[in-house]
Image 1: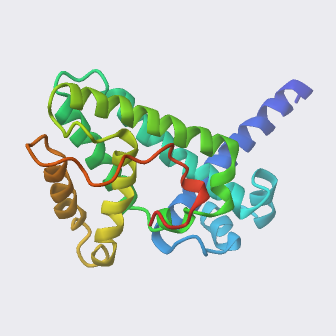
Image 2: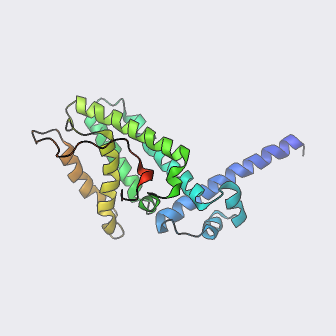
Image 3: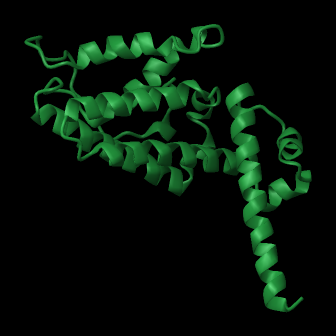
Length: 213
C-alpha cells in the first residue's frame, strides 16, 4: 500500500467515524437529553471512547456540531421555500417543518444557554436562520398573509415556544405540537387587530440566555 493510498484510507475512516459519532450522538441526545455519557455514544457508534475525543475535544463541541446540523436543516428548508408563489403557505410550511424537527429532539431546549452555542459556526448559523426566516416573513407580509408587525425573529422564537408548550405532552402524544402550532398560525394571520403591545425583538442571540425554552 503506498503512502497516498494509506492517507486516503485514513481520511475515509475519519469521515466515516465522524459520521457514525454524529448519528449516534444525535439519536442519543434526542431520546435522552444531553446528559448521555460519552461512553454510551461511543458504544452506539461501535467505536472506542477515545475516538470521540479525537473528533470532538469536549461534549460541548459535539453538541455544537449537532446543533449546527439542526440549524442547517432549518436554513435549508427556508431557502427552499423562499421563492414559493404563496408566501403565506411557505411560511406555514417552514414553521411546521421547524417545530417538527424540534419536537423530535429532547436535547434542543437543554442546549439553549450552554457554551456549545458560543461556537462561531453555530452563532453564524443562528444569524443565517434569522435572516432566512426574515426573508420568508417579509414576503408573507408583502402578500398580506401575516400581520404587518411580525418579524423573522418572532418566527424563530415561536418555533421554540410552540415546541416548549407541547413538550409536557409529547411522550404520550407526540403530535400534540400541531395543536399549538395551529393556534400560533391563527395569531399570525393579517387581521384588523390592534398593533402588538410591545415592539419587535432585536437581533436574535440565543446563546446569551437560557430562557428561550
